[in-house]
Every structure is written in structure tokens, then in C-alpha cells.
Length: 556
Image (cartoon, rainbow, N blue to C red):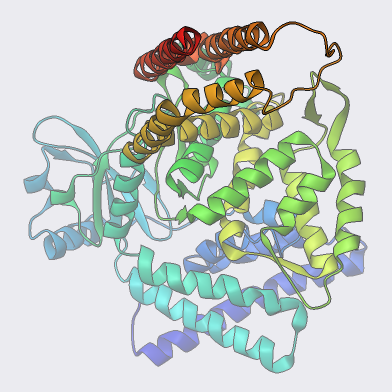
């Protein structure tokens, strides 16, 4: 909590951070002198945890800088923990009275002042509405805005010093600090998180594999957030069960229908569907933010970081995902370069050769029914591609980086929960299902329907008559057909014309029936009875019209 003059507080915090830095540097030098492993990633993680508050959040942002930070540092920073004592009852009461003009006891039937979870920004309390609904109430820490603003100023001062001394190896810190500043400005208002939650809940309507909590807006402000309480252990708790070998807890999960492979597949499906179909997805998929609900439904919490993809970015990522799942090095190179911004000295041929070389180590041989199987994790392959970017002078578009970060988080979860799951096959299936669904949606939309009707009207008007005119020209020898058995003394033109017309009519009927029965399979037509009926009516009318015109021609 802030006390005293802002300048004094700023200097005090700066000296505190410098003390933490000197302590960690001292440990590093001591290990160096003793000949021990330096263990830089864990020393960095410990330093962020000692600094606490904003620096924990900054470390979590750094953990997502997979395009600039070495993998071992990203992995260590993923394990950052907030070790901050919970706010007192008096502080919680003051927040409610300032924001909602009433104590919690007047707003809820019950309210537990003892927090069930705590982090650098706020803490979570369990409560019950007057109608008996159980809710989770997030309460922001007092003075958190000032604390974060002060720490961002400290970081910018350190960055200014880095630039002044030209320490180029730390230049990459500029973007994470800028991202933290934007996050501090936007996401410390809980109403933004509530809006993110509402958006994802709207997108998830009808989904049987994900659950987004309901927001109670009448009990939500910039510092208080009331949402539906989702009952279930998070993935982090499940991993602790595995680590401790808690068979009783694991058995309870199995009895509730929990299947690690199915749950992991649902995580992948939800992520890709949100990203590709809706263009907005949960971008902070840490184990603590995913709940295991009955029937392998994935519950989501903490919506402070939600990323978006433009339609163009979605198209590029779909193409990259299909190329990646196909195992084709040339396709991977082509689609990966499509999401990159090359510098003036980029070595494109070097990138192509390097990707081809790496791809030979990514996939298992032989392929099964034309499908490839990963020999390594998606994270490793993504890290390899990002390393190629740094080595050969290209930069990945920032909008794409958010998707890549989330893909790496999803892959990390899958590797922990269901190590045997073939994520390449899951990626391919989800993307192909999405493309089929999009095609069906466009065809059955009003615009698609009008387009089809226009085309069919043209075909109904011009198609049969045009074909008959062509057949008539063949009959009158105005258009010659070359065949192996053609001779001058053959059959009469009239009999040849009739035979050609009859063959054409049969061919049209056979092709039409094959299209109705085989195109997409019978299940696809059963799933869209209106489309099937429309197609059947069209083919029947077209054929009858054709036969009518043929009969009129024969009578002349």
C-alpha cells in the first residue's frame, strides 16, 4: 500500500527492486565461483517473486514472449507464484461501501470474508445471492492502481537506462513493458473483464464442451466483479494430485467421468473454435484458469487477457495449421512466411532449407493413411520456427504472436494432462470441421441462397436448351465429333442424333443422382433436409424439361 509522498514512494520502491537485483546477482556469482550450475531461469523467477505485485504480472507477460525469450526462461516464468497476503476484512468492506454503497451483508445472503484465492491484483470470495445462487466475488486490492502505475514507471526508468547504456541484449524488454502499461490501463477495471466474459459466453452458446460463468452486472463495478461460481477442481489441482499420487482424489475425478484425453481434446477444440470461428479467445490458458467440470466440460475463469484475430489473420492461421498438420515442409514455409514481416536482409532460401531440415525431425515415419504423426511437441516445433525467425531476419506479426502463445499454452497443457494425445490429428480435424461448417453456413445463408437461386435460374433457362442446340448441331453435322469408329458409310444422321441425345439424357440423370447421393455422403444430406429437397426438386425439374425438349425435337 502506498504511503507518503509519491516521489518518496517511487524512490523507495526503486531501491527495493535494486536490492532484489543485487541479491539475485550475488547468488549467480556465488554459483559461478563454486562451479555450480548457474540456473539463470529459476534465479530470474525468484527475483520476480521477491519483487512481487506488478513484477509478478510482468514476469507472466515475459513468459509469453516465446518469440524473443529462450524456452527455458519462458518455462520457469510460467511457474511464477503470487505470495501476497490477503486484504483485511476492513479493506474489503471499504471497497464495497465506496463502489456499491453497501456492505456485502446487504448485497448477498452470505459472504465469506476469508478469500479462497488471492493474487497480485485482487482476491476471490465465495458468496451466495438472495435467491440461493452461489457466486464468486473478485475484490480488487486497495491502491492497486497506484502500485501498478508506480511499478510501470520504475520499469520504464530501467528501460531508459538500458537504452542509454545500449545493452542491446535487453532491447526486447520494450514491447513487454509497453504491453504491461496497456494492460494496466485497460484490465484493472473489472468491467472490462466482465465484458470479455460476456463475449466469450455469447460465442460459446450451444457448446457442450465449455462453460463460461454468468456475470451479475448489478453487483459488478470497476473494483468488484460478481460471477457464477463454477464448482470443480482446476487443472493445476489435478496435476498436484498426480504429483502427490493422491489416488482417492484421482478416483473421485474418474467416477465423475473425467477422461484426460477427452478433456484435452475439448480444450483444443474450444480454443480453435473460438479463435477461428469467432475471432476472440481466452489468451491466458494457465492450468489454474481451467476447471474440470462433469462430463469433461472445460470451465474457464480469469478473463483479464482475451485476444482477438481479424478475418485475414484467421485465414492465415487456418492455412498454417493445415500445413503444419500435413507435414509438408514447403507448405509450412509458404504459410509461415505469410504471417511474417521480413527485414531487408532476410534470407528466404535459408529459411526454406532450414524448415525442410527441421521438418524431418518433427514427424514420425511412416505416415498412417496419409496422415503424419508428431515425433515432438507442438511447442518444440513452434519454438524452432521462432528461432528461425531470429536467425534469418524475419519478425512474426504481433497479432499472430498472441495466437502462437496460446497454442503453446494449449500444447503444454495437453502434454501434461494427456501425453499420448496426437495433437496434429486433433488440429487437422478441428480445422477441417470448421471449414466444412463455414462452407455450409455460407451456402445456407441468405446471400448464399440468393446466389444459388440466381445460378439455378440461369441453368434452368439456358442449360437444357443450350445442350440441345449443341446436340442438334452434331445431328446436322454443323459440329463434328471425332471418334475412333467414324466412317463415311455409317448410320444415318437421324439415328446418330437420337442415340447421342439419349446417351446425354442418361448421363445427366446418372451424374445428378450420383451428386445427390454421394456428394458429402448421405449423412450430410440428412443433416440438411431443406438443401437435399431443393437439390432433388431442381434435378427432377431439369431432367423433365430436358426430356420434354427432346420429345419436341423428335416430333419435328
